[in-house]
Length: 192
Image (cartoon, rainbow, N blue to C red; front, side, top):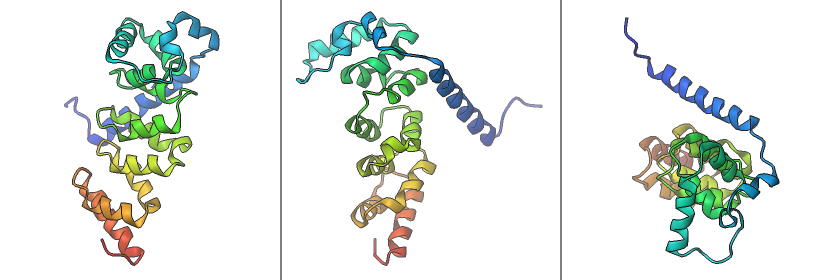
């Protein structure tokens, strides 16, 4: 007997670990007083974009934090801190960023457009009605090759004719999405 699992079991385990991480995040309480443990440049929003030197300093400070501190910072930190933390290898930290009350529609759109983030980020964005009620977020998720196929397929029916035509020709996404976009156009009486 081998220790190998079939792919369906692996997917189930991966989904289970994601829900375990979400359950763990539910147990963590973050209060505004927690922000006192972080330097102000990690908490306070700035209007002007940071210079490269300032960004490097912020990055170095974040690297020195422990995982629980990063989780708290993900929920309390400013946009720059969240943009650094969303790319963390630890999935629970990127999931904490997506739960931040400071996260805006523009942040969600920016994350949906990035191709260097973990696939879990796109799955969580795609399942969250807070973000998917915005058309640009739906469009970005559909056009991002890292978005899980079942998430992308849910949004095809909401796309405009112009975006469906572009999706049907997009070489970066799955051929299943290309074909689905063509089929949706045909149902609407349009040509790809």
